[in-house]
Length: 280
Ligand SMILES: [Fe+2]
Image (cartoon, rainbow, N blue to C red; front, side):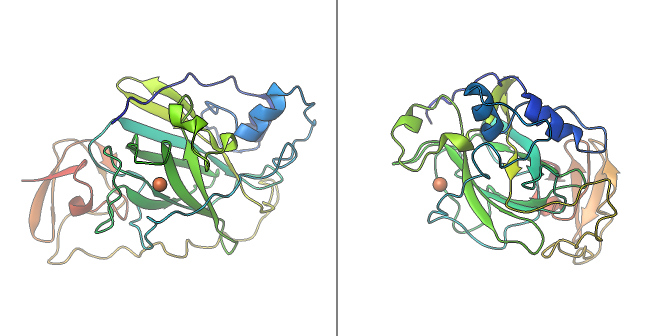
């Protein structure tokens, strides 16, 4: 696998700061700005006192799906597997800069060797933005494969709205100059984090969000969020429980030991997340 590059994040723009400020709950400041906002700042364009997410060049642009999408990915925000650890986090906004909750984000990518898993669901998973419109993906830096620069595929869909299919890119990649699909508006901010990488990206969907100060409609439950089901054969593992490293549970008649502390989620059942649970 070719060495990937890691650029320091660019400074936060006033526009992104204001967008972040729209999010009611106390949240970490965005590490980077949306490409659209950064482009406006770099070009010296004036920023409106009340920003609109689509006013500097449009929404997050679509990209081709490519040949490797598979439906019905697992509900999980951690995609376990070998490689250089990568986190991707950010927010999903509507065109009016309101953060969007319950947005489905379905990620798929190549493994460290540039191969897609077409038999199973390795490096595939979907999640939903939280009440603040935030998401966080834990995965690895995808490998390169012939004809393409380094990228991550994603489908984004606000409840009952059209799907945006697009791809996210890494700065400083030599193949960014030759890949005809590559779009600099889809560049993530990426920086080194220990031996891993930490990336940020904000999506802007062609959806008008309800400002958080208004009594908005009751959020629609995620359409494909699975209902917790008891493990076959019984077990002590439970979604919503906080487990410390070393704790043991049973699931489907098998005992597992927790490898790293976490709060269990549906989709993180022990057989599904070897990074979290080891069979005893
Ligand atoms: Fe791809």
